[in-house]
Amino acid sequence: MNNPMHSNWGSACSDNDWGLGNDSKFDRHSKFKKPCKVCKSHDESACNCNFKAPTRQLAAPLNSDCVLVNSVVGSKSVQKVAETTLPFTAFTPAIPAGSTIRSVVVTPNLAGVTRNTTIIRDKVVNIGLIPVTITVTYTAPGTTTPLLTATLSTSLPFQEHTDFPGACPEDAVVEPPLVVEGIFAQPGVPVIGTTGLVTTNAILVKIVLRTTITVTRQVIVDSHGGICDVNERRCETTTTPTTNTLPAP
Image 1 (cartoon, rainbow, N blue to C red):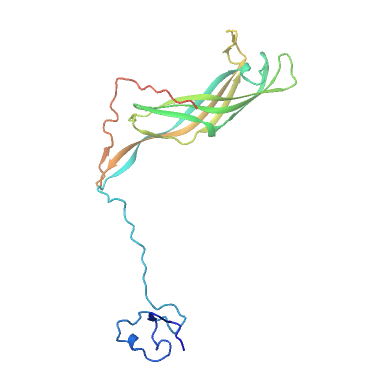
Image 2 (cartoon, helix red, strand yellow):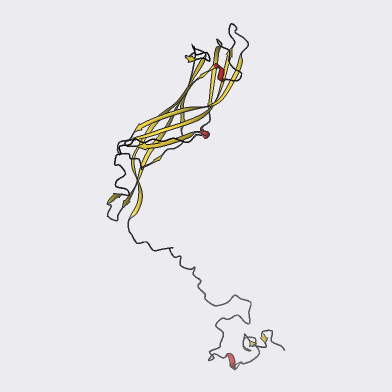
C-alpha cells in the first residue's frame, strides 16, 4: 500500500516505524535518523525542547552608581483664607438696600480652585481663587415676609506666605488638594456704594482652607551616602526682588 508519509522527497518515517519492514536509510546507525518519535502513534513529540524568552537588554548601560533623589527641605500644615466683601447689588436679583439678611449659604467648588505658588528665599508665596455660589435669603425693608432669595456665582481670592527657612527659588513645592475648615458670612459690613458713600448694604464672606506644603530639592546621592546639590548656587541672593504676574484662572 502507499505510505501516507511518502512524497517525491522521500519519507519522514522509516518502514519499521510504520510496520512495513526494514529501512536501511533510517537504521539506527544512520545519521539521518529522525530525533523524535512521532510516527506509529498519536502521542505528542518526545523531543525535549526548552524554550527561553530573549534576554531583555537595557537601552544603554549605566555609567554611574549615583542616584538622583528629591530631598525634603521642609513640610508644614498651613491655613489659607479666602474672603471678599460683596455689595447687595452684586446679587441676582439685587438685594434692596436696608434689607434684613436671614441666611447666607456659601457653596465652594474645590474642583475649580486655581493656585499659583512661588518660592522666594525662605518663604513660599501662594495666591489663588476658589469658585463659590452664594445664596442669600432676606426680607425687604420694613417687612418680615415673604422670604426672598438672591444668588451670586463668583470667585473668592486667597493668599498666604509661609516661612520656610532654607527654601530657595529653584526648589519645588508639593501641595495636596485644599480642605475647607470653616465658612463664615457677616452681613452689615461697611462698603462704598455706587454714589461713593459708605453703607452697610454688603456681606463679608470668608472661607478658611487647610493644606500641607512640602518643599523638595533635587540632590545627587553617591554609593557611600554622600549628598551634593544639583545646583549648588540655587540659594544665592539677588539684588532684584522676585516679581511675577500670575495667569488668570
